[in-house]
Length: 66
Image (tube, rainbow, N blue to C red; front, side, top):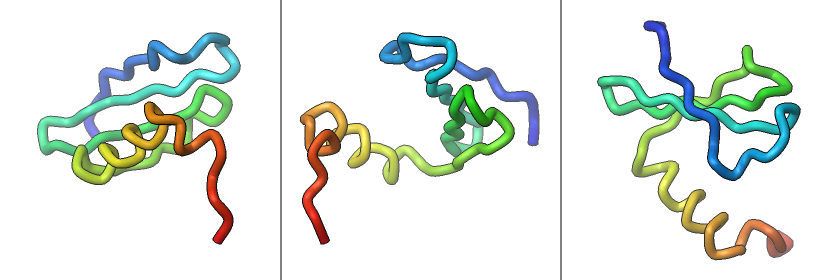
């Protein structure tokens, strides 16, 4: 994997609970968390968009059962 330009989320407040994101020229989006930076999740913009939308609208704060 080429060197990634990691950016800290503007919503991350503490150094121990930061979320970082990096994009590649191929369009892949990489996510990692400061407590376990070796674990990297990879997705695409199309797959990440619904998650970000749910977080912004508050649907992730009270998940529905099932």
